[in-house]
Length: 300
Image 1 (cartoon, one colour):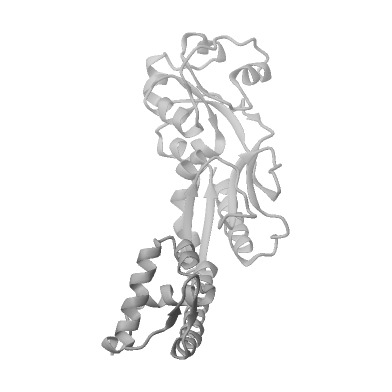
Image 2 (tube, rainbow, N blue to C red):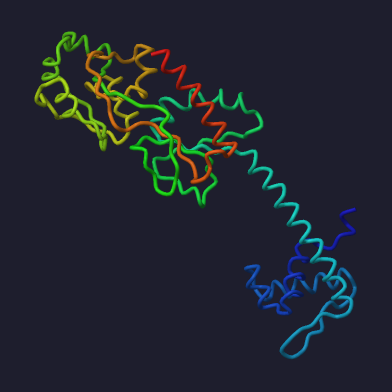
C-alpha cells in the first residue's frame, strides 16, 4: 500500500508552495532552503509524471493538474493535523501534572503519591519539582503545592496544612551531647539553619523566653537538606513538623522539647489557576490531599 503514496516529505513542500505560490516563502515557512523545496517539488512531479507548476520569470502558478492535486493534498493534511490535535488534547485531558516544592516533595508528598494514582487511574499523574512560582496561564501544570504565606501571583490558593517548628537531632547526637534535657544545653550544640526560613532560631528562643544562646552553624537552602544534616549528626535543626514527621516516626530524629513547638504563619497551600476551583483535576487533588492530611494529623 505504501508504495502507492508519493514521498510524504514532498507533500508538505508542495502544499506550502501551492498555498503561497512561492518557493522562497515556502522555504522560509518550513525552515529549509529554496533548493530543498525545489528538489522536493521536482521529485513529486517525477513521481506523478506531470508538471504541478508553471515556472515563469518572476512567479509560479499551479497547472490544472497541480490545482486539482493541491486541493486534495491541502484537505488531507488539514484533516491529519486536526486528528493529531484531537489525540493530543485527549492526552492532555488524561495528564495530571502536579508541581511541588523540593522539600515537601521529598519528605512528604512523594511517598504518598501512589495513593492518588490508585484513586484516579484515568489520570496519568506527573510530578514536577521546583520552588519557582507556576504561571498557570501558560503552563501545563494543573495544581501546585507550595510552602508560603498563602498569596501567589495570579493564582488562587487554599491552605491544606499548617506547621510548627521545634528542635530536632539524631539520637546519637543527643546522647553524645549528654541527653540535651534542658534548653540551656543548646549552648554547647551546633545549630543547623534553613536559609530563608521565615521562622528562625531567634524566634524559637524568644518563644521559650530566652535570648539566642548560640547562632553559629551550617545553613542549607532547603528544609529537607537541614533535616538530612541533623540525621547525619551535624547538630540540632529547627524541624518543620510536616517535613520531620516520617523521620521522627522512624527514629532517625528525636524531638528534644515537645512542649515547645512554635506555630508559624507559613504553611502548605494548594495553588491553581484563577477560576479553576471546580476543575476536575483540582477537585481530585484537593479531595485526595484532604484525606492524606487527615490521616497524617491523626497519626502524629
